[in-house]
Image (cartoon, rainbow, N blue to C red; front, side, top):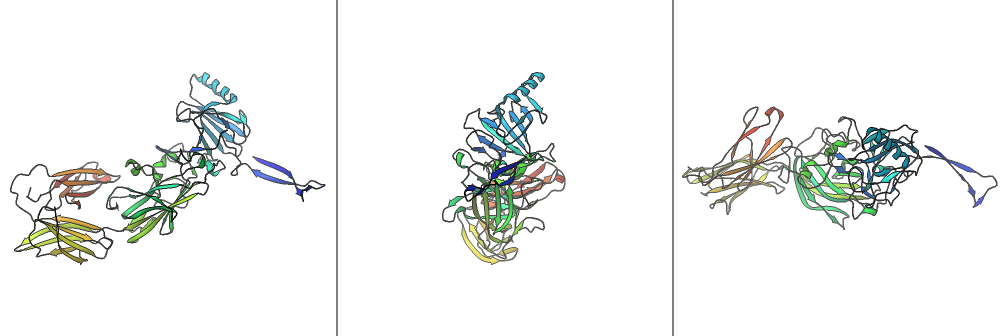
Length: 548
């Protein structure tokens, strides 16, 4: 709707003999020209884009201070397009078509205006039930800007409040805070934590396959949130952030969603999310509301870490929240080269910065240091006695480093205490060290230039002298999207890592690499695929220091 606004021109503070007028053409859809939809003090309990189980929050939840009955106002001229009543969901709701073709939705009302109430009551009586869904003719119930359409309540679901949506001409839920429905907000967002999320079986965070959240603290001197220390990452990973905003009138009670999130790596912007609009759809190919689990991190929430926003875009994410950033953007590659989208990090330390901003431009930032590094490894450690000499052999993986430090130590008390025997640099893939003296147990440790280590213990093979004192091994499986991690624990020290054989439902048997993670703890990564079937048969063989 357009209006012609007239006002007289004053010249030197006096009205001239001939009145002069300017004509101003005003478009009501411009930001700031709608009325606030509730006749109550402006305050929010929830904002656009917040997480709800299985969906996004599609509008604003406006605070009614625990009360019902505040008048619900027409934000501009228009007509009632749809009225719905239900004991669930939106409860009593009005869909009000504005003259600029946008749609205002008011939900959880206690009652409608008299004119709307008469139409609804008639339809309820005709159908003999409470729940009705009426579509009205454009001229049937018109309302002018500021007219009362109904009254706030708590029907459907939830505590007393007004749920308000603003939908564009295509029927997409649009962030009302961007279109004039603002509240006073002078408080920048709070960034609580940053998390790193391994995205495949070969990816690690501080040596672990599971996502890891890092707590942050505000630093007054630097004016940002910081995490002490550095985090080691390897492989293909995503970054996620736990953040909330507050607004002045409800700052003590309500945590709100941010509007914009940015990820920078070494000063370069690699990802951005803006919560502007989200589409409803009649089927899964059009609907975006149900894609919330691709924007938020499911794994971290399952771990009990709370709600994190993903700062990377995975396959299947059709949401229109990311501007120029496409599938694969935001993903970090440490040690792995990518020919597609995402960012490859060279070995060494990198600075990540996350920025969070609300609609009013209040902004916070957080910084985290990461070490991009393919960790070193030790495999096949073995001991061989030749006369008076003992030889230790092992296969060494230097990871991202050109060379590593190798430490060999020995124990005569089954691993309770250790004596360092040798230390030297090597860039070879295998070592063979002799004349170490006879000890019961040996340990090969490698350390790279960044101080990251790996180790493996071994002992000479012995002939079994008696029966085993109880069970030797326990095993637990942690399952992920397309792989599993077997955690093997021995009751006693072993002569070498367990031998693991995996027999899939389909395909050939394979022997995976076993990584030692503790004196009696080992780990095996089992990758799955559709060509292997749903069941894997796992056999684990191990020998302790007594030959059991």
